Length: 282
Image (tube, rainbow, N blue to C red):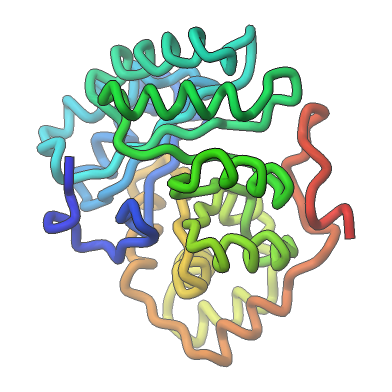
């Protein structure tokens, strides 16, 4: 399942993950099918889904409807820590379920959130077995703090990715530095800050300067930082607009202007079960 030679999108990290992906959170029913099919046919080379999105079957339908060969795109899936799914036997079972729902093997399988009720080492042991069984090629995590990453890397050095909230308004500098030091890819979810990007005068000014959209500027900034982004879109126009961010080159000055927007109070996603974030523990 080595796609490296087939991709035109810049690749990030040891797993060779395309820097721009198509996120499928909240894409249900026909929206999920049509969104995935449209994205693949337009040239997206990375699709991101999760069991918690309850749309794996629709993602599979979209893949089939697109007619795009499997070796032309990277697929990320996630297992959510509910109903004891991070217990080793259940984790392996859930990996098989995701593979069956998707109709194909994901390139990357993530632990969607930390689970304080199950020893991380036990879940990672199961994840290693999942990889050995051919149910995924790579193992990653999501919403892991530095402390969780330290524990994870001590047991499994080949964790290739941490998917976290990342956009111009959140200060993830501590986590970002740690991940760079350990050569771990960062995937940005909610890259447009749930719409807040469109209210930013700085982003609008740079969009005017570059003759592009705020979405393109924001996504291009994330990729210029060396990260992966997985924006969600439903309309064909927005899917196409986001794709153009791959070709937008920002100046160093513009990148610095956007980076200066970060704030310790910029987090948008903070459920009750979240760990103590690095930015809140300063």
